[in-house]
Length: 75
Image 1: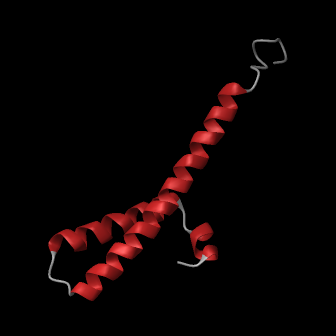
Image 2 (image 1 turned 90 degrees about the horizontal axis):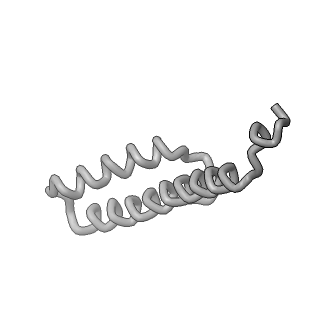
């Protein structure tokens, strides 16, 4: 997967495609070559999802670590 495609792929889109890849692998009926290609695509999609989730976690952590302006009277 190209870097630009990775950045353009949203979490939900990557997750949905990953679900479809897993479904196809579990269903069987594909050649070894097709199965390997699906596996590789699944690995890339999992990385995209992991990056999105790590980014969301970092944003949440930063938000929780920021001083609470409401508590200091800056409402």
